[in-house]
Length: 354
Image (tube, rainbow, N blue to C red; front, side):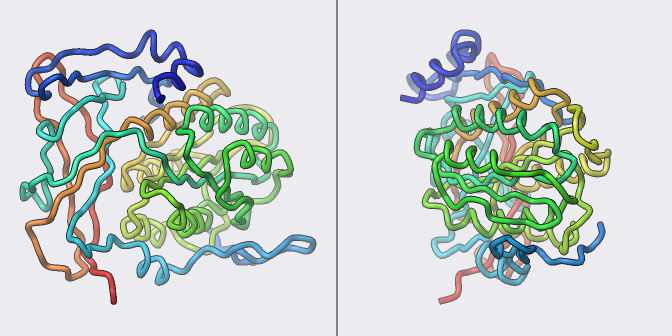
């Protein structure tokens, strides 16, 4: 059971965090639970000579990041059934996760036109997860603590989650195919941090790989202490891909933790991580200590387990490849303050080719 697992591994979350409030309009027999955030919310390019996927001497050839054209064909939302599905996170003003809401508590707008919710699910479902992990030279002295934080993430995750691992310095490499969490963490014990930071290329590779996951729900966790300085792809190309792919991405930018040669994550790098997360319905964290880093990974794992899946059939039946902006909001609930809703920004209406 989810509660047993969480109470065993994080007893402070269960004993301190679950405050059930009977809410008018929340549905018969339903309660709204507010789950305490274990972490404080931290939210406020040059081209390489060697392209991603090329192997240095002694290395096996790495899986290359896909081209933008390949991703566009495979990862735009395919509207065979005309249903658009969203992963939605709800938090209160204290950044605590809010669970127990019903279908009638939500409203969805596409291009400012209200839509009818046709699918709703708030179950704790397994996720196919890509871990995109910085192994550049600036991670020396930080790798062990980052690995420990990743262990906390996996321990808090659903038992049936599957994971793959992308490591990146000046190249993005697939270090582990889909596997269990323990096997993935063990892969990081063999890593020797060195080189520069090809974060954008790693994101491309992660998005291509995660679509092969066996679960319908998919997400990526990116961990880095520096901004991109070695990718083949530009940020503009990556941003376009993010809007097409529809994969939820969480970013952890390690601002300061001591050791190594120091990261280069300046305000611009933080802003990029925040935009990546916001565009895809994820969230960015910027821990400054090992404790904050572990809190961030634990928070993300809990968030992935306490989300809503909501679907609707668009009133606009045109499938002309245009971008459609989505807004989800929670109706004001008696006894609760205004709630914040997080989800991907929109989708491209493209039909699947036969």
